[in-house]
Image (cartoon, rainbow, N blue to C red; front, side, top):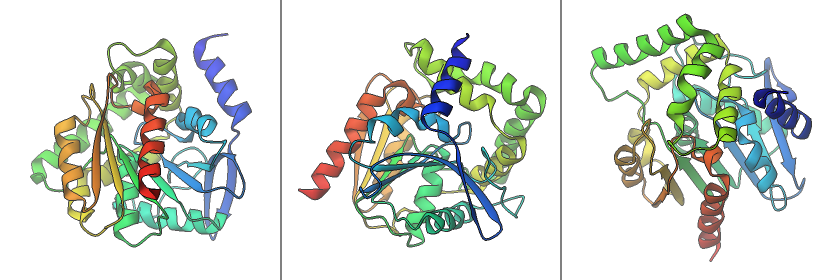
Length: 283
């Protein structure tokens, strides 16, 4: 049995995909933990899905109700109505999803593109009980020249058209990790990327090209943790620090020795950083 099959079996057997229909929209998600516990909601990035949070679904389950969604167009979740959506459209979908589950997040964690969704949710007044966590956040290209935005979008769409999800996973997964990442971490990233849907990826790419996380930052005044892998070459620390400075109550932390997919590469370090920050919020 190869590594990808092993990971697939472990994730799908331990944290099977659930589905919920809210109005005309279907959402898929994975869950674990204490039914009446504080709620931690996990939002994945553009090249991933709910299964990438398997380590957090396991590690946080003793103290939290853990929810990892599949964003619109990922997993079994319906695509958005607009072919060129905004981050606010994903935030609105998140509100619908949480409403369908009758939950509000105590901790909302967004990674990369998921940070844009989490930031838009917070900026639009979505309730967050304790803390907003933005990990290796993508700021988006909304502030860039139109030519730059068009180029970034065209490259991303062309790569998907040329390679498909499996080919993209083979060629791109290692860029999300440090040079010292384990084979297991690489396999986890590849497995999730290989399951991408072309329609959902295209919508997310359009959102990324027009979004600007920093422009929304001052609309949220709650405790915010911004983290970035010290070896992240996708959203390097310089940009992540700018994101942190834009928020009114943000703390910045470097995650040592890891790349962009920090929560996959070193879940123990990633999870402990969140727990430490939340403990400080309650102090």
